[in-house]
Amino acid sequence: MGLELYLDLLSQPCRAVYIFARKNGIPFELRTVELLKGQHLSDAFAQVNPMKKVPALKDGDFTLTESVAILLYLMRKYKVPDYWYPQDLQACARVDEYLAWQHTTLRRNCLRALWHKVMLPVFLGEPVSPQMLAATLAELDETLQLLEDKFLQNKAFLIGSHISLADLVAITELMHPVGAGCQVFEGRPKLAAWRQRVEAAVGEDLFQEAHKVILKVKDSPPADPTIKQKLMPGLLAMIR
Amino acid sequence: MGLELYLDLMSQPSRAVYIFAKKNGIPFELRTVEVLKGQHLSKEFLQVNSLHRVPVLKDGDFILTESVAILIYLSIKYQTADYWYPPDLQARARVHEYLGWHADCIRGTFGVSLWTQVMAPLIGAQVPEEKVKRNRAIMDQALQQLEDKFLGDRAFLTGQQLTLADLMALEELMQPVALGYDLFEGRPRLAAWRGRVEAFLGAELCQEAHSPILSILEQAVKKTLPVPPPEAYPNMLLRIAKIP
Image 1 (spheres, rainbow over the protein chains, first blue to last red):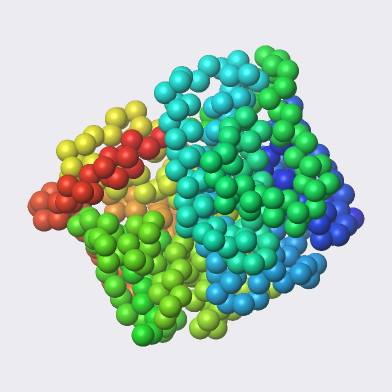
Image 2 (cartoon, one colour; image 1 turned 120 degrees about the vertical axis):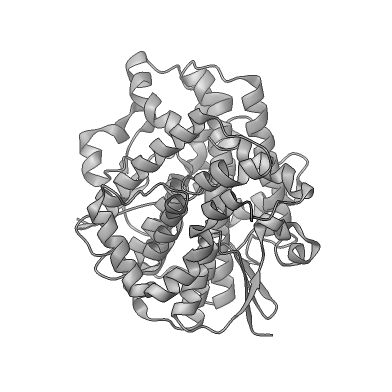
């Protein structure tokens, strides 16, 4: 069996892995794990990832979880163009720095923005207090400012003049609040121009295809009660 | 100017960087940034890291933040022994897998007890008991996963040899230990792992790196800890409010 990727394009790290594999012509079998149907909680998927999280990679007997680990594994195994994760010591340190930073900041903020603004109230019928939503969006705003000031600055891409894993991981995160209807790029011309460059570098068609699910998530029908019951414990832990 | 490391040994990622550099004989100037004294908010430090966070590496003109990035940079630049950051495709992927999980489930959770027990009282703030209990439950859950999913029957977290993963994990776990929660008690496999990691790093180096955090409760009782300056309060209160 060749390379298998367990993904749901609803999830931002899954989109990064999907775009990376497709863009670099890496052949893989797509195994879709529908999070909103609770498929990640199934016994079958627990065999692949006991942590019950996507993305997961299976390459023969080797199973790997965590998106950054998967991206770096694919990058090394398939000898993709150097700019994704440059050989140069300082340039690759900059990618590592961004990937570490986003984990505890942008990742958390984008996820919470989507769930507090749309998924909890609309999909699960769980009201979110206006104070909590306001705090979540304020925190997101602060982090976006840091992304622009500290990482992007006046460069074409986050690390320099080429796209890297950092940009891919960042844009797929930002599309989460975009999907929730947040005006992420409004009043941020530098970030908006960067988004255009990243989309162009990835390819318009691939970018749109990968984001179809998240851009329509606002229109999801409400979850049925059994699904809701199944999803709630994991969700509460995730967006605490 | 050679390599400079801006660290506070009270901070777990700073300790990981410190131990790594010392253990590998990497020459560096230690620039201590005492967070309790608000030194991370100083204008001088702002020039080094506008995010006011330690650890930071300065190598000539090159400034790098984030402990994982710093550790990888040092391991490549100083060509440290392969086991730290193994070149083998699958072995390295395991290190990154751990570090990804660590960022989500360990980091942010194991540092809370320092805030609830020492930092908050220092500035007259209090963390609700309910949050303290929740933090303990989340820690216990993470420890279970650490033991079952990562350590398993292996000597170290990602295999038979110690890597950056073990160093990062140990330093986080030392935080609640120093605050009186002996999380190795009743977890023999994890306790044996700690023994192996500390033996590998060397008792002397571990003691040196851990002594500031291990004496923090005593210092708090004796009231010998520095009291943070007023300009540090807003950030500290925000950090305390964010405890889930």
